[in-house]
Length: 210
Image (cartoon, rainbow, N blue to C red):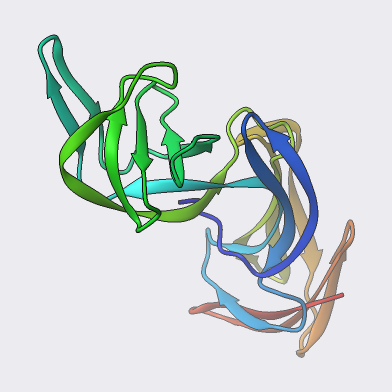
C-alpha cells in the first residue's frame, strides 16, 4: 500500500492505466488549519499528486503445482485487475494471474499469465483490495518541507520536490527565516504559509494556513 499519509484529498480525474483505471489524487498533510508538531529531521508539510489504482493483495502465497513447476504469486505482490468472465481477475506484473470466480473475496484459480487457461487452487485464498500507486505513471509528484532546527534566531527548513519518487536536484534547497521573540509568527514561502506557534526541544509546533 502506498506509504503516503492522506490529508485533504480531492478526486480530480479518471485516467486509463492498461486495463485498470487510475484516479489522480491531490492533497497535503497536515491539512489546512490543522495544528501539528514536527521534530528535527521530520517533514512539516507534504503536498502530493499521484495516480492511484486498485490492487488485490493476499496475505499468503497463491501456489498451484504443475508438472513443469509451481505457478506462484507471492504474498503482498500487487495484482492489477484485468477484464475477464470471472467476477474478479487480477494479474501480477511478473505474469501470473489469480481469479475469483464468484466474487466472494477469495481467489479460486491461478494462471501462468493472462493468455493461458487457469487451474483450480487446492483451497481458496482470501485477498483484499487496496490503493496503490499506478505503475509507469508520469503523474506522481510530491513536495516536502522538512524541519532542520533552529540556529540562534534563524529557523532552518529544507524544500525538496520528487517526481515519480526521484528527487529533482534543481528543486532542492535549504530555506532560512528570521525568528522573532514571541509567538505566534508567520512564515511564508512559495505557495505555503505556516503559523509557527512555538519551538522548543520537542520540536516545532505550527499550523498550516491556506
